[in-house]
Length: 187
Image (tube, rainbow, N blue to C red; front, side):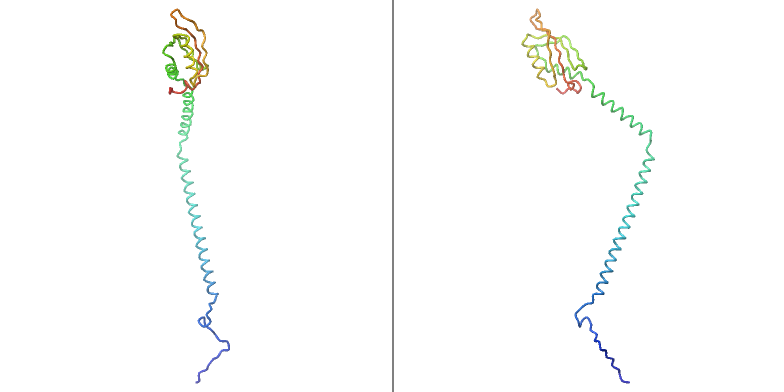
């Protein structure tokens, strides 16, 4: 039997012969790769959201457990203590430190001036003194010394009299700022 030769009228050419690639397999590969990347991204997002949801539920559970553990009596006691500390702070802020007043007088009195009486009024922010000095010039210097102090608002000296011993007796009313006696001595 003779071999039949089948001849086709449309010649078939291979890729090697034409030098061209078919775009169909390349586009199919790109589409599949894109689909895989999208599916992986979607799966990652889904897993991340589940993780976040479980972490939130765990945190809410911890908060509710801790809320149940808080003792209401302890909270009330802490609030009462905080109120007492606030009251104590306001009392200390208005507390009079008499040492500060005496330190002021000690540091701001001339050696030739002496005091016979002393009184302090917190309501008037004033120090009242009866004293005597070596002379009128000593009293004038003493007044200038008090007036130069930054915590002194006003100095009123009156009742100047010359004693038989030659000293000058006087009465002084010194008005001071509250900082002089409401803070510990730091003059």
